Length: 143
Image (tube, rainbow, N blue to C red; front, side, top):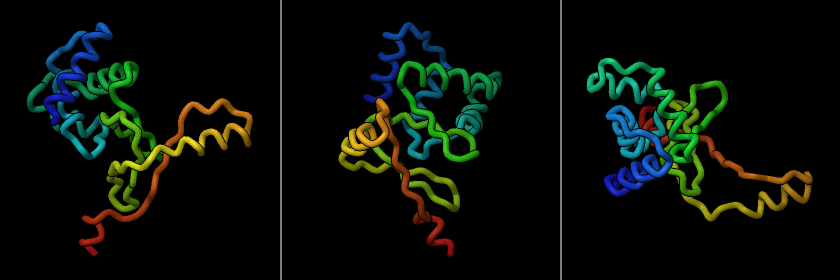
């Protein structure tokens, strides 16, 4: 499953004229395999043994490139550091109030919310996001 997604992502990079360096390949692979919406720091820590000369700045720069061509989404919640999500299909997030873990869930897209918002506010609405908050299973089992 992830091999196919990685190939598609690499093709997208090629089509966008982005050079595929070993670091970019590794960051992308980590993002696709990771279900936990890692921060740039998580990615850096996971790859620093493999790429001792890679800096956190390199990870950020690569994530910025991926974001600009639509390969990843940056999730900013409150003041905690951004998390990155390689799943760009329409989905929503459940977020643990305790450990901050983010879990994807699919629900029929709430497009009617956007059209209602446009009617009420007069905005041209471009997108929306939905989060639900609670305590994840792991944190629940610790109590």
